[in-house]
Length: 339
Ligand SMILES: Cc1cc2nc3c(=O)[nH]c(=O)nc-3n(C[C@H](O)[C@H](O)[C@H](O)COP(=O)(O)OP(=O)(O)OC[C@H]3O[C@@H](n4cnc5c(N)ncnc54)[C@H](O)[C@@H]3O)c2cc1C
Image (tube, rainbow, N blue to C red):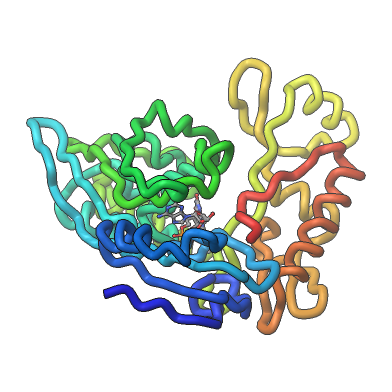
């Protein structure tokens, strides 16, 4: 039985804590519920907003259509061989819950992605990544339902065209599919990734001599808690912008004026610049404009101090983009999704 609610505040459903109204709201707990939705002809004409945990969206206005919160649960082991296990996971499962499930069972591959908020179904949308690991490294396939037709489809890794915080679901397939489940292939013999960020240093501080999946996940949780604001206390959506990738030749030119500009090589011609550094150089770190601002410890994170609107967040982000563009000639691209 599907319950459609009307005029629902989406404040509890987005980590920025933005108080926008949705004209209609429905929670989907099983794939069959989506099929039922397709039999309700009057719903077909409505605009649709697909929602997971709301940790990567900015609601810039009230939504006049139907918000569909995907809460499909279930973690099923569908295959196993000597080296791997395959888990098919419902789109509405918590991502961090899945990481803990795998750590508990000694399945390696996603421990570096601990404590990323949101749902499993949203993880492929921007190919979530942290500490040298991305979703695509363990991704096998996903099941989806086409929004326009209700048709069921399967997408392979190649179909998804994963990139840095990117996939077809952020490009031409944006808002075209409900992702209902994701299948990952985890390692029974884990390969530890400890070289990125402060993982090695934190493991040493924790007194860990031999790395393990559990120790790495705990180190990542410790680092993230010390660096990122908890959305339960201060509204935010994590990194607001992507780290820009620029040509090495342009980076060399910029280094004449900014010799201390950090960069990470991508390939022989391209480097990645930390967006947080660019924003900090433009004087935005810790700045507050009305109810919103830039976090005092992490310039890449925009925050809602309470009562802030999505429009205020958008205006702040545009001001930041303009000053980074004016000073460095680099256009920052948002990582978050504006609605
Ligand atoms: C404190 C904090 C730290 C973060 N750290 C990281 C990080 O380290 N790395 C990283 O990559 N991200 C990070 N994020 C961003 C965010 O957690 C991820 O992008 C996450 O995958 C979003 O999941 P969600 O369920 O909240 O998606 P939502 O915000 O609900 O949705 C995001 C987009 O996906 C679409 N969508 C959601 N579910 C589905 C579905 N089932 N089918 C089809 N479309 C769907 C929505 O329409 C929307 O366009 C962070 C966010 C916060 C608040």
